[in-house]
Amino acid sequence: MQTAYFAGGCFWCVEAIFQRINGVSRVESGYCNGHVESPTYQDICTGNSGHAEVVKIDFDESLVAFEQLLEVFFATHDSTTLNQQGNDKGTQYRSAVFYINTEQKKQANQFIEKMNDNVVTEVSELDVFYPAEGYHQNYFNNNPNQPYCNMLIAPKINEFFGKIS
Image (tube, rainbow, N blue to C red; front, side, top):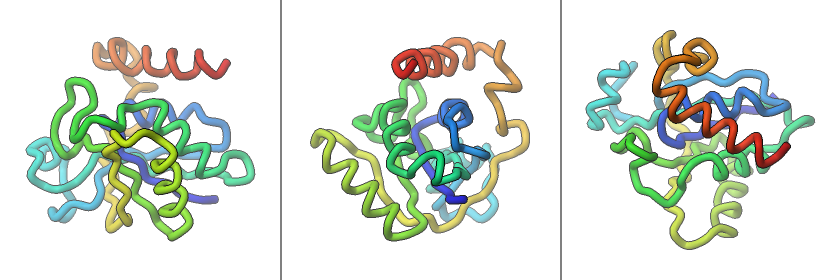
């Protein structure tokens, strides 16, 4: 098993996509690389804690490669907007790959180099990961009728998986 950490806006959206990828065994929403120890969602929402909303993805590399996860990541969020995804604005919503080894760093940087020059995705070493509160975990699957899920997450899932069907 391997682990990847991606920040691509609201972690509910990112989590919902990666939970549907063959080879991904677990997705956990959380916060990483800020300067507040054990932050809460309220800390993150201020935009002053330095953390990013991130998903921790455990995956079986014999079924899905890190590079394939990068493809999904970049296909399902806007990597050209600084600190914003749609109406979600702030440094906590930045686009980032938090690598845990030199191979992930190399692959992320190579992937970005192949894209256009407008990519603002940060590639940084993972310093610390804090799991988000329980109500954030498995959010879309537990709250499919919530307006945010209906208006933003469901269409994103349908658009992405409709393209690869």
